[in-house]
Image (cartoon, rainbow, N blue to C red; front, top):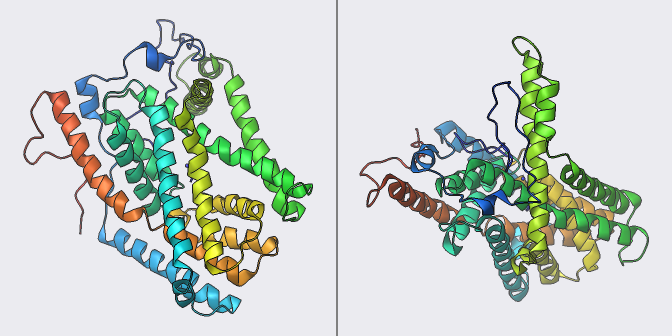
Length: 418
């Protein structure tokens, strides 16, 4: 739910255990293998007060034009999804049909959504709370909900949520390189469930092991995509420890470096960060922390919301069909749309139709699911965002050695401009 711009002023692209300091000869020292020693455990993750103080919040300039454009987009998407699309399918006004759904199944869907977010917070704590005295249960809740809000509001394929998360962790005193590696590990843990589901369910449906059938395009193709994602993670984990200095060395030469050489040197941090983060995800799995089941809960209970919405309006198709349609629809989050609004709905409805599910039932179930999963966290996310700002201001005051934030002090957010 399952995608980033770094916080302003931070260098989250540096992999854990790596350093960008150069020797007298201009070479880079070798990177420490995180599978041998965990740098985040070997040394404190608390940054110096001056470093944490300098970390500013990702700047969000809310101009009148941007606010109006966003409101128009949301209203247009809602108008099409709940009024236009039902007319096309001959369903009538969806709003009235949704109101006639079984309230007990809808209530169960709301409970499932709450459990889904509880799983998200659990896996967040399993990755980021280690060795940090400031990231407790409350802080984990605030950071995750504020990140969800940023993901909903900004059409950046989840980058807004990643930026908010990275900023809060940096302000807690966590070093930038630690934040970078743990962020990659967090995403690997979450999306390994996504990729594994595509492979398992896609092959099961494609060969007839699971009920529901489906064509090659809607079963085996998603399975191939899932296998590709798993392969990328495996390759990242197998990269050599000195991948970054190797790439930097291959682009170095005598005299002033050319633009392409500087670009290669900068890009060298990407595979190095992927390697460190993937290996750390493997190490976290080896701890057998029960909180890691939160990754399964995050996807599973959210999928359960869609299943409950089917029961609210009729007879649900086989769960394996809902399972595949759900994950295929999630590809819509990659579109440059706030929270994937419109793209996710279209993907799920199209996938369900490909499995032969009644289109009217599919529209009702998917739109009801999105009404719960998209809008339910929005208000709590806004409240969490404001509370997170206050929490970070207290951290900042502690780092500066004062009792509380100075009067009129900025927390790092640009003022709303008319």
